[in-house]
Image 1 (cartoon, rainbow, N blue to C red):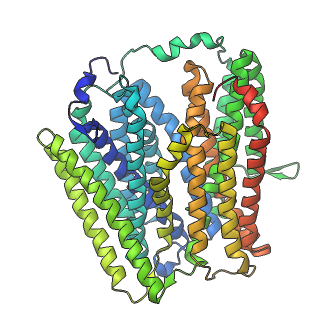
Image 2: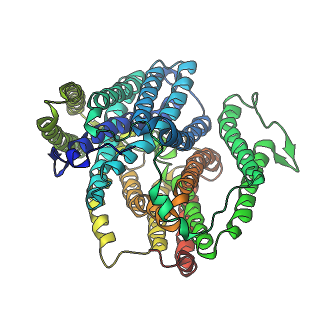
Image 3: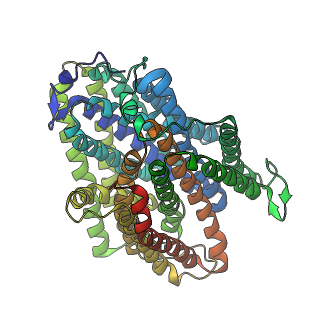
Length: 584
């Protein structure tokens, strides 16, 4: 895939010490994250908003169900996108296909009719699958001969991810809530199109990287083949994989369809031993998957088997981490909209407006500065791509300034419900360098303790919102809780994310033989997908728990699950350490 690429030429035109091509990827990823997080911030609110407010007036449970299915399928689709890129079309065309599908998806959602909304979500699922795993693959190829600079490259790229999420939630959220849902969904599509075009017209900057793959030997995997004996899949094992996967996928799709249609369309319309059909089928699929592990693991050599068990343990914790963390765009967004006092007056309003303006203008200023530096290096060769980027930033600045003008002209400060979502990106950009220093110091915790700290922080965040919700009467549909509780939730959850998310895939790559990395990454993304769907299931349960015991009880339950898993991870450190056989 990279045989004819002159890697040194990639580093000829540098921006901030890195190839200009990295910043083409930076802005492409930024617009993709802008569109994804911008749309995601609005989805549940759109479904649950009243008909008078332009929404669909759905019960919250239905919105949570379809949101969980959507986010789960986004991660499952990466398996298809990664396979197509590796075997068929290459990373570069996979990114282009993904960007085009997502552009179509956002355009469909701007129309707001049921057919177009469902079609739009489908396009977005497959588009994310092609786009998401292959951007980082291009970076990996670019730095194949300069591994010492790869960490810095991924750090810059990660800033692009969070910059896009920040701006997308801020601006799409504002337009969707204050102007109209179509405006928010439409803006997400416009900037996905900008990302597609600027990547397309600048793609030659990557040389031959990411083009259609040829018959290139995987030397990395081959070099590590001696770590364990081969353990090929038998026909029976392949059958278990197919059956459990089909059942699991059918369940994920069936869940929202059954609820939205009030049981009229239910693929598993039966009961067995007192268990309803959908529950029985997903438990059956889980048992088949466990059976597969029981059959396969003992056939590896001892060290490989132990390390794979360690990966499975971390994957298990990861499922619940994302299930709780991803309450942000579901139950926590509803909490922000319906149960939080988002109107500030007097000095509080003025302080918020000033802080909000600084939070908007400083990041935009920094990103624009990077853009100018990129133009100086690439305009002569990739002028059209640069012009498209420039137009996109003119639009961004115009919307951002209009939003601030609108906010400052109000007597009070009304905070959009989606606004709280930007705190995650803001805190990541602020604190990620500190965590990097921590991991590089002599106080770097082991894997179990990182997970334990992460789950503890996750629990602290849920405990904060549980305390804030303690005064809400049982069954209440509205309240006026202070915004401080939500700010604390996003602070603690982001700190937890920095302990878990960046290090997770690193452990997978260290613990399994080279030839098995692709398969284990697939299993890892499967765990994340399960966590995303479970997030929807948890959010659905919030309605029943709130009606019976109060909303605070729901958040205390999530805090308790987080604390329990933190203790489990810490207690099992000696066991997992032995299973890892010297890997840190």
